[in-house]
Image (cartoon, rainbow, N blue to C red; front, side, top):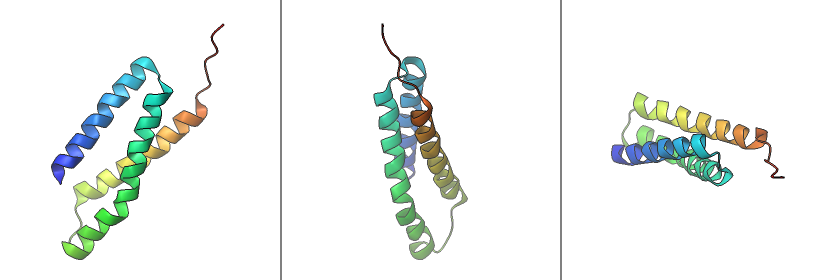
Length: 87
């Protein structure tokens, strides 16, 4: 499962770099969608840790926090961005 996290966060890093350089709302929406999917998976992954593995992974728990904070940050960024009018 660790390779999934590596791919997920690598893709997010690439999208973030593109967003910083281009500022595309579509890129931001894609990032938010990925983080929303990640947030929806957190309860299932936490269940697997506690019930099936009988342990709590500190690395995994910190990733859950990062995913949730990134989703909140992305939503705030989308809400605070003003549309650019072209004259």
